[in-house]
Amino acid sequence: QTTRNRIQTVLTTEQGQIVFVDTPGIHKAKNKLGEYMVNVAERTLNEVDVVLWLVEPSTFIGAGEQHIAGQLKKAHTPVVIVINKIDMVKKEDVLPAITAYQKLCPFAEIVPVSARSGMNTDELLKVIFQYLPYGPQFYDEDTVTDQPERQIVAELI
Image 1 (tube, rainbow, N blue to C red):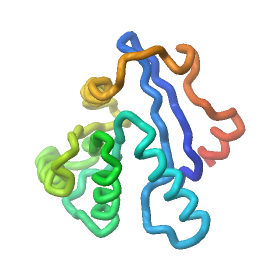
Image 2 (cartoon, rainbow, N blue to C red):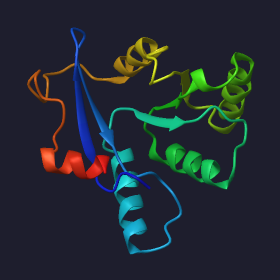
Image 3 (cartoon, rainbow, N blue to C red):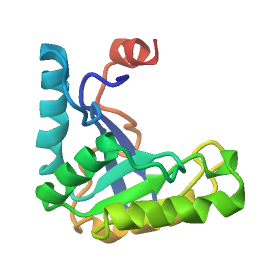
């Protein structure tokens, strides 16, 4: 686990504002800290307009992925599965990964991207904006996170 706390990052564009909420991952907790982190993640599932589940392009669907899919289905929040790092695999390996996740989560939209190169991230933003309600911006356009500088450095370390 890398993220221990809920962190909000803000993207403001001409189209609107997206507040990304990064939470600890959903997993089977092995201790009190793990239980706390899972609780934060599961609570957040019902507090957002759309859930982005970031995965890598793999056709292997294990118990962990099945557990997460079950939690996402129970949340009744729209889900977009973001298959990241598509630039790291052969093109012919991306479609089987999409198919595997479609079978696991037929209720979810799937968007393959490369965060590193920016490939298909414009499409991901279009999909996200489809789920966001119209309303006022939560943050001024210069805000990029709700975290103090010290916390950002701690997360990076």
